[in-house]
Image 1: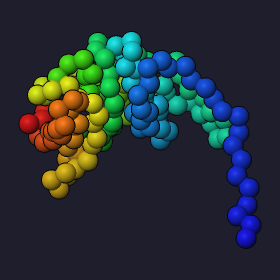
Image 2: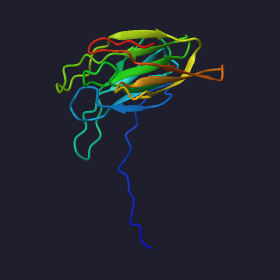
Image 3: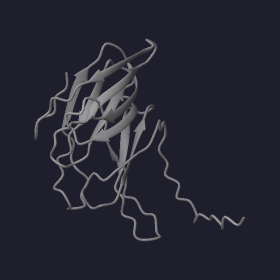
Image 4: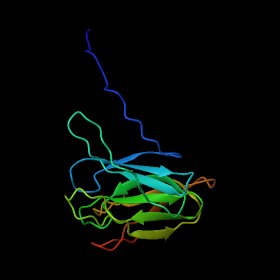
Length: 165
């Protein structure tokens, strides 16, 4: 049985220290997934705008989201405006941070940050996003490090306003 050949082009290395996971999401509305990498070492994370063309990898300079130690990240349209927002666990604090996407859709510019914090009972280790209760809004599930606990944050957001309980 011949399954064919599998080949990859030369890889593109991107130097990002302290990366925990990588998230791929179209943040600027240009139909290309941008790279989001949390940096658990330097109190930052990086967004790299996808400038690739067919067959050629190309990414812009990192846009750093600073202010706390990012653990794992994920994304979802939390406020229902059609734009991918980012959630990150604060590795050195008992909170998650949600970056509301305020880009002008389709312009190809990576969006400025608008940050919303939500307190937790312990340090978040990993986050995941899905509509857990079927109401059409993505909720946030969090693993709370060193506590053998999980926590679910119900999305109560409305357009332009991010909130969780």
